[in-house]
Length: 305
Image (tube, rainbow, N blue to C red; front, side):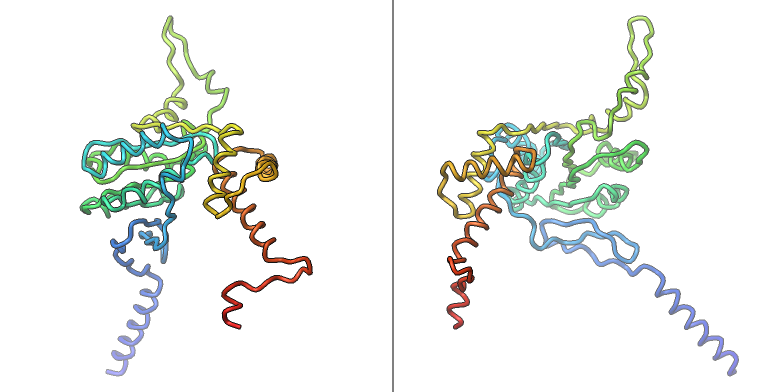
């Protein structure tokens, strides 16, 4: 009897060790949130609720009137249950592609719009994510930011399935909005032009080129973004400064904004926003530091004293 009890005890210990090695069951998503990010824990993926998503407004985005109007109309169709397209936003860096998608959540969350951010390395989980939300009443945008693929990467195949469906139909409450600096999402090389064959008057592109183009063509709506000119950049910088409480705009401020853009080698909404933060912050700090170099107490610190 003692040998039997010893065997049971050893088996119980072994089972405990095996359970420690197995992935813990993931909790159900927090559906009270409006935005999530796909993350991993204990070897399993799950929707991590973002309690404080970036609250940018459509009104904060300037010189994007055409792109804004088209994506807002498409999203409005989607949240009201009408047919709508997956969207690919491409073009110059820092021109508002990602901010525009984030602003849609602020605009339409009251209408049931929800946002799920998925990194490129997690694209293989897209079918699993779609199944998680398929029977929900909300409307979900899967957001893939700064999306691009190198030659040989296979993640785009999972994206193709979600965009066009496989044997199973696509979910009516899910769209994919992706941003990229590349129009066709994959690098293109001069050598690919040599892969065409000429048969009489017919030109047949090489299979590699066709494969690359086929992914971007699965997005029904293409929006292109372009670098800002100097006047547009300065106007955006001035508007961001006003948001940070700096109303004055003179030649000195203008020169500082231009110098900042030269140091970054670009004129974009992102650079204008970064300049405004730097300028407003340095100005506020300068007002706190008198000639003797001692930092003045803040209003809260003086109240405590």
